[in-house]
Length: 477
Image (tube, rainbow, N blue to C red; front, side, top):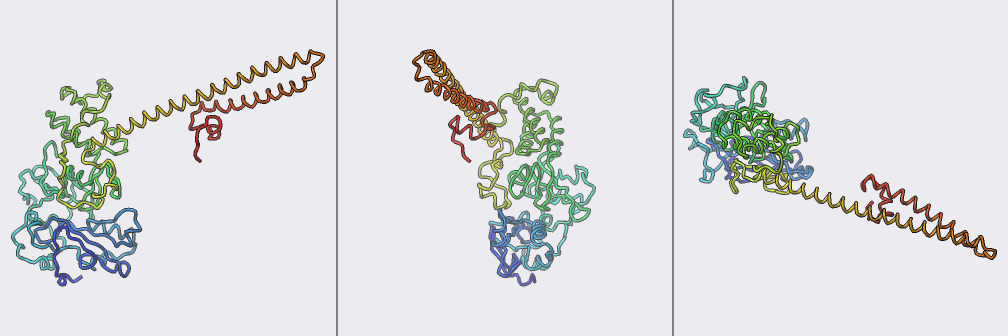
């Protein structure tokens, strides 16, 4: 698209469909893609957060709403749904960058001075892609004296990729600013509170962007998250759409935690670990979770800090009852009403599609699950007791029936013997028929009892016909 023809600017959180900011008549005539922007404004006059959604016709073919927050996400969708698509031609058909209006509600993130008087359309035409910061390796654009460029060695020998989105901001430093909230990170306790994306992108380059774990958890971009994003103790980088396993991250800050002397510091670190690990079914994650819960229980019980990490003591006494920590608010400051500054996925506002374990307080959810499990087990115990009573009543009732039949058989046999010995025993044939009939009845009832004792295998393994006929239980097909 000819950028000179773009003459409109867009306000914060605005949306629309079709040109100039979304494809139109693609892949079929009449198809209009939808676009939406956030409320973070770049120094160069464009919206940092912009989203693209397929036409309604394509949306209906998917069980979940499709919405993309980055070019890589769109490219992956095109490759999957429309193999062979000319991606360059697709993006050339519209403007990915959306110029923003000058308004107080959308103030730039540390805007610079050079381009404040230029119209966003002029900037779009003059800007060249792939531009990287002109600051040297020893200069932090955010003015952070504790920037990792100075105090931390490189954890990956590969260079970070060129970034023409967030890294063009005059006050944003990729090495020490969170990509989600734009605030600087803290290296306290070895930097446990942030994660760096070291996924390889564009050949021998890494992404290199950093995010607070707290911000990622709030945004459903870390931990275990269901739905289309599908995270399992992972961090999802919004810049490159790659995932990072967080189990090793938790293991690292647990090692650091063992050298911390402050109880508050240890509890703060371990509570973050709980939030990262909860909900996962991975064995390694469960083991780490159990270890953290045990350490927290010891910490709450008043044991000396240097002793809470020992594993040679009898830890079973700490496992009884729910953890005290589960009843307290974790130290992630999930304050009601506070939201991250960036836009979230559509699924944020639809509680019915949000996994139940994605809540503002995972500990409350854990207690809820434990209560539900306790109620289920109690109901199971009661139902099994009721089933036992039914079986006991029916089996002993059938035994009493057989006992009565045997008693009647003895009486009828005695009556037959008297008439057989008497010269005038004209009723002998009738009495003999009664005895034979009683014997057959007893045989049938004995066979029924043999069937009924199959209940010893449990109601679930007993044939439905037996349960229905002999125990009077309603059985649905």
